[in-house]
Image (tube, rainbow, N blue to C red):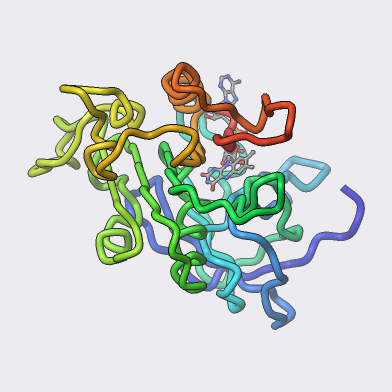
Length: 270
Ligand SMILES: Cc1cc2nc3c(=O)[nH]c(=O)nc-3n(C[C@H](O)[C@H](O)[C@H](O)COP(=O)(O)OP(=O)(O)OC[C@H]3O[C@@H](n4cnc5c(N)ncnc54)[C@H](O)[C@@H]3O)c2cc1C
């Protein structure tokens, strides 16, 4: 990377669990957050002890571009099988501490037009596992702020109920259909959960004629009526793609001849 990184200050930290946090970072020089597109990430940097160079990691922006005061991030402390280098240092930081950041980048952005330039009015189906939810928080808030009329279904899979970050926000938003699911309903953190269980991809598997997603939308999903975004673990992306491919869906990694596609994916590399 070329240009010098900027510095930022942690102005807010909310620990959802001991290893899952919402963190807000403000440019240290008092400037506003630069323009970006929902779905982009910033690169954070820390000078770690014993390391010659700054250690950098990418984090998706959960805040929408309309929020100019701070970047909001949704970060999991990587602890297994060994403590993650960057997140272990980050989770030891507190409000007021400083770190480096580099300007937003990335192509996991909203597709608002078809290749022929016509508006894409298909329903948006957002499928996330774990912190793969972050870019979809930005999408939902941005689409709400801009008064978008597109239908939005948000499917989020987490280990337990406590890890369903942003649940209160999504339950209150009237512009989205929110379908959360937990893969470990028997953990104490899931106590009292009466909602969906299993991995997020199970919401796409037909059961009694239709999938949970289709029941919520009220129609059968096809490339004509739905555009999918998938973000999170490699396993989630592979599973969702394997369910969608037989239905005729094509991903951005494998576009049609005319450049069109109906699934956009972002992997966090786990
Ligand atoms: C575009 C993009 C956006 C992202 N957005 C987010 C986000 O919004 N939120 C978020 O939480 N993350 C996000 N990530 C992931 C993030 O960039 C980091 O990869 C993550 O936080 C782990 O960094 P770390 O330095 O703590 O772990 P690392 O030290 O890089 O380790 C990564 C994993 O490998 C394991 N590991 C390390 N060393 C070994 C070893 N010797 N043997 C076996 N396993 C080992 C660790 O246990 C850990 O699980 C994003 C990634 C990308 C590419």
